Image (tube, rainbow, N blue to C red):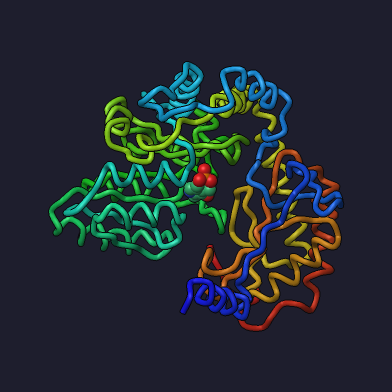
Length: 404
Ligand SMILES: *Cc1c(COP(=O)(O)O)cnc(C)c1O
């Protein structure tokens, strides 16, 4: 068979299973006003939780940063590392309460690079089954023994840690702090305690925690800080700059030795072009805005509470999530697609998430809230959801004892 024929067959199979994905081409930044096919929409599908992707200060900083050049022109270790990267790394280290930080061009690269640098053959990596694909791929590529545990099941984690201990090498436990498709937080205090008991290193992916939550002293550091954990408990903290920070890229924060080590050994840092200076400048401005404006987080929290209250009143299949990620579990792919299409026709963009991104039978609408939404926009979405969902829930997967 020719390559083209094989690809056509595989694509047809995917279409028949209702899993075919199509790109939406937007004509404006979805924060939260988007334009799709010439029509104005309200987006409840971006990860721009604080509205920083369109914040005037952040955009002005990007434009100013572009005066250093449109691109970094080389890898960080060759000649693609600028003062603006250093400033951003210092700001990220301070914001997360760590000694140092290192920027990567994406969260995907940061996770793959950090995991593969820290462990290898003879070691073990223990992961939550709902971990982000980049952590899973990092685990695979590392060649360490990969052990998984049922979502947020600390008993199962303890058993895998005991198994890992018999293997003799080092053990890395990697979890999302806030799960990207469910919105729930990992039980980090218990996980950290188990890591301490088993001499395992804990890595927390703060893609959805950074900027959104933290402690009193470190209000934007993420879910680990919110759980009262610092560098001793969470020696490897990864965060992204394309979500609440509204830009692109990511970082790992930790001890000076960790960062120095990653510069030497993280291949996704070494063998790739440096972050464009404009992006570093935009991200730095975003971190400063986050820290200076706690009212953005308050507004986000108010919007989350408003959405959950309205959804509960309307009997929508809410999940147990306190984060800006508010999935509505519908179960079957066709229902999710038809409800998302109905919402789009009413001017709302929501994520339609299907397997293999989520487990079979747990297709869902992934609704994300932002500080930039108004109460009226949220009410309008809730009304549209109420109408779209009436009578459309498909028997099997609908509103059952889904998630956390
Ligand atoms: C988005 C995401 C990533 C990847 O980050 P990018 O910067 O988009 O590559 C990693 N982990 C989690 C949990 C994410 O949600």
